[in-house]
Image 1 (tube, one colour):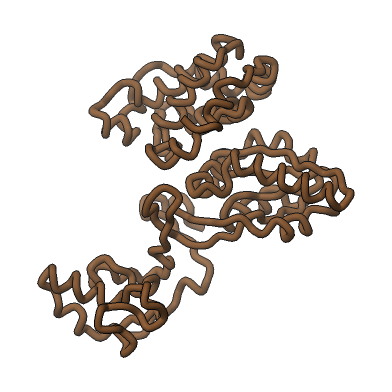
Image 2 (spheres, rainbow over the protein chains, first blue to last red):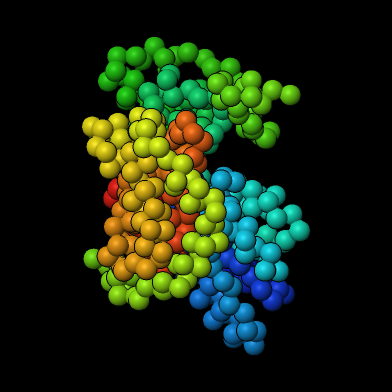
Length: 224
Length: 137
């Protein structure tokens, strides 16, 4: 799931304060699940903005509307009907959702109300952890299901470095487990320690360019 | 039960607003509902239907008929109890993965999404404790 956090209120306020009618659009997908961009958070942000702007002598309360996924055109028809009534749109989706929204209404200024933080997992209620950097060269099969790109402070592909403490912590912080120490422990438990000796060549860092993926079964349909 | 849920349960239903929303997309949605031939071919395309041992309540057709279908049948004149039942169908029983298949071409996800939009207009949506405990996406 994609995890996001709300931008500072002042930053959001600065983005929208010159507009008269603003629509704040929530997303019922990932940002709802991580409690930052669902219908409830839309209402909360609108109230916070109204109060903050009132202190500056501006009367503006954004309206709220939540659609099920901002990253899928199938869920836009209800929003299409009202979007034109507004001067600007605030989006409480991840960066992908914001861009989809901006593409959908190119004549409208669209602003992000959230900072997209990472792809993560639910460790517990309201506790999310980053576990994947979407690098497009997954090595989890060799590293016993522990991602060195995400969980090693240096994103080392061939670790560990010399900064691992005796109790398996990272030199960056004694509260941070060394990813390569964890990989070593788990590989040892699985009797696959030979994996750690393999030298992995330099990565291509393909995630630095924009990604598009068409599922194998649909390639014919979208062939140019 | 948290504060938000009790507020949700106490708020009066705005039947006029529901009716207005339903009327906006009446043509397409009612056409979809009337096209359903109850063939049940959509059933096995739903992973929840398969997961819950082919419980008919998880059939995509069942879900739209008992959510959006109910709203149209009652012309929006529904009480909060009815809306809460629909909430369970459109959020707990469906994750909107979009994989359901209808041989006639009925677009089930857009119908579920529309039913959710109607519920959202009444401030009915999954609460934090629900969203993280089950598949209330």
